[in-house]
Length: 207
View 1 (cartoon, rainbow, N blue to C red):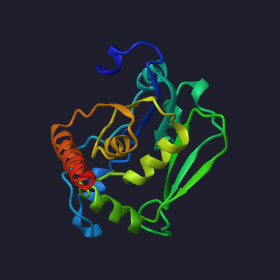
View 2 (view 1 turned 90 degrees about the vertical axis):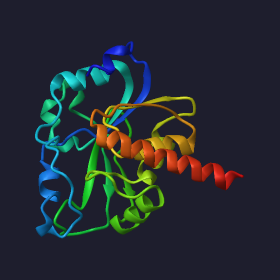
View 3 (view 1 turned 45 degrees about the vertical axis):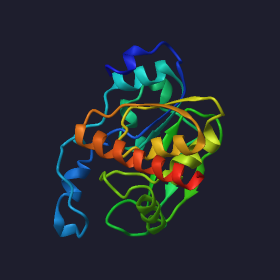
View 4 (view 1 turned 30 degrees about the horizontal axis):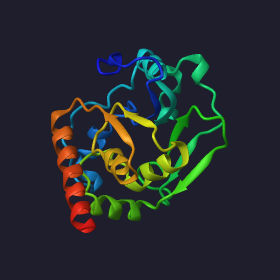
């Protein structure tokens, strides 16, 4: 919220955000009985953002893509709650412990769209771009798909919850100007290192 106050109205062409869903995901995945990598229970996913967050996000960006909105749509301003263009990341998994896919609300007036990236391929993608460092990490290829379909060359992109910085890698790959916030120092440092490693590999490849 403090970061967004710095910017004038509609400064960013597109905000792509993945805020807390309010489902306590770090507590769930931090339990080894589920058989997954253990993550520190940082307790950041106890509650979703407030109405004030969504009002400020709409103020500073022309369009928005908001992951997990099906968990907290009631927190949106009434004028934002209806949308014809929801996005679905189909993970290619069925009857798994967690959801078969993830939904994103958008401000676009187009049709619902589905991005198919099986969970197994998503994990490979994460390994190829620095590994999985965040419990809610999304693959770079998902963000590249969003940018290719919903952003235009020269657009300024905003992410208020940078996490593992998959979006930063995607913006680097596709040459978009990104402003990113992350208030957790551990996530920020790990994400920054991940991005820098990817950039160094790309430079070496270009040579």
